[in-house]
Length: 441
Image 1: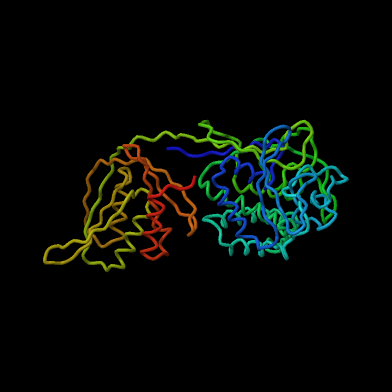
Image 2: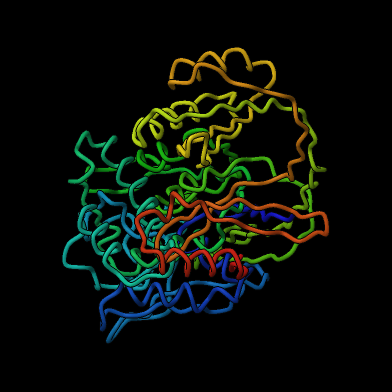
C-alpha cells in the first residue's frame, strides 16, 4: 500500500505564500482547484493571485503574487509576510514592499507572505473571517482545513494578548491576499488527505519587529508560541524567517522531523521576494511515495458464543446488544431473526469473543439478557489487513477502511456512521463516488 509523505525544507524560511507556491510547483495539477477556491472566497474587484516563475540565488522558483486592482504595483522590494494580526495598519515593520518600494529602515524584515498595497477587507475579526470562509463555495475539505489554520493563529494571538479568541482582530488577515494564503493552504492540505508531513530545522532569524504594541522580538510572541516544539537553527541571517501564517500551517500539519524512505515522486520550490545573503530564499517541498508492507492475512482462533431470546422486546434486545458490543473483548456481534418451536419468533445472538475473555463475556450475557443458557465453540477465522483513513468530500470528512485483496486490488468501504444523516439516495451516491472512484491524492 502506498502513502504520501511531504517534507518541507525551510532553507530561507516559511510563509503562507511560500508554502502554496512550493506545493503547486510540486503538484501543478492542483492549481485549478486551489486558485478556484481562492477566487471563491474573495469578492470581485479586490485583486487576484497569480503564480509566476523566477529565480532566487540562481535557482528556479515559483512565487505566489498578488495583483491588486486597479493600480497595484507588481514589483516588490522584499519579503513575504504582511502585518501580524496585532500590527498597525501603517508604519509597521511588516508594511508591504510593493507599497513602499524600499526596504524598511530597521532591516529586520527578511520576507513576508505578500507585499502589497491598500486593499484591506472591511473587517477582520476571527469570527468574521471564519464565517467568510465557511460561507464560500469551496472545494471539498477546504473550509475545514483553512478554518483550522486560522484558529491556530487566533488561539496563539489570544493567548499572547490575554483576550477571547473570538475577539482577535486580524490586521494581517484583513488584507485579501493574506486570506488567500490561508484558503489556498487549506485547499492543498484537504486534497492531500492523510499525507504525513515533516519539516527541517527552522531558521531562527533575529532582530525586532514593530507592531501596534511596540517593538517585539523576532520571532514574534504569537509565532513563537505556534512553533513550540519545533527545532531551530541560527544561520546568521536576521529578520523574520518564519511568519505567523507559516507557523500556523506547520502547527496545523503537526509536522515532525522524521521523514521515511521511499520514492521521490515530485519536488517543488516556493520563494519569497527578497534575496537573502549567501542563500536562496526558498521553501522546498519534497513529495515521497512510501510503500508500506501489506500484512499477510491473519489467521486466529476465536470463541463463537450463541444464545436465543424469545421473551424480550425489540427495545430491550437493542439495548442489550449495544452493551455487549461495547465490551472490548467482543470482536463482533450479530442478531438473527428465526422461528422457533410452537411458531414463536425469537432473536439469536451470535458473538465472536477473544478466547481468554470467554467466561467474562458469558457472564455479561447472562446479566444483560433474559437467557438462562448459552453455548460456544472455538472457530478459526481469517482477516485481511486493513487501514483506516479519511478523505475530504463536499459533505465533510469521511472515514474509510482500505483493504488489500490477495490479488493486489485495494478496496475501500465508507463508514456508515458518517453518512447516517443523509437520505438513502445520497448515501448510495456518496459511497459509490468514494468507494469506486480514485481520489485526487
